[in-house]
Length: 306
Image (tube, one colour):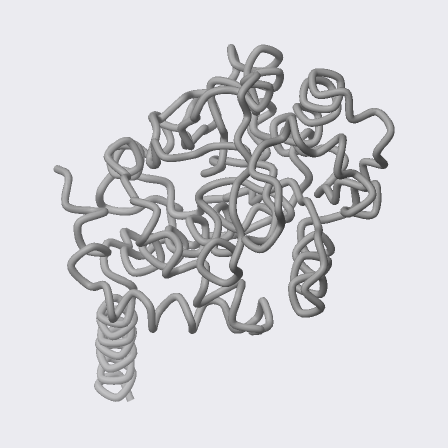
């Protein structure tokens, strides 16, 4: 009886050890254990906030979700309007956002919350705010719009009311160019794009608030209106902004994100695959994985920093 009890004890211990070894072998690369940290010193769980309607943010966020999960992180994406996103970052409720436009569009938020945030640098330096029209429209500059307002239904089609570009158009472009007689219609980016698509299908004039980089420039025959008065501001950079303690909680990922760069053509490619494909949001992870397999060298370069 004694021998059987010892045998069962040894067998149980061996089974437990084997099970633990098997579980360890099945863990994602870099996983350290139940402590919630990875062997690179980073916390395992990262929370990325994504601006509603900002397609470049959607693309960058799903890209980093894929990249980080390959390295063993648990990544949660949460969509939010711009203002509460910055509040959440400043409070530490979110870890990072990939779509802060500086020095103009999101200046107000950085002025308000900047002391509680960390700027990890620009990943795209080709950004600009635009008013865009179909290529067939017979105006080329914003200063021609007032005289042709009736051709455009006396309206400018905007995006989200809380968006930085909405404030720029409302506070600077409209008064600077005397467009107060036109309705500035705001709702959402998808609604703006739907209006743009419908107008082009009917060969009608439409003027929309848009920005570069954006996949719409690949999808539709459109042109930017010149801005001789500079009311839309100079070209901008797209920055990664994180909570104040990002380097303490994610020392390795912080290095990767500081080195993050993505040119507009590469961004358009991913945006088109995700947002302009008609896919459901639930399909975005699989689409991103497929895109990553087709751009493997670029994806691998995102985590090549020591």
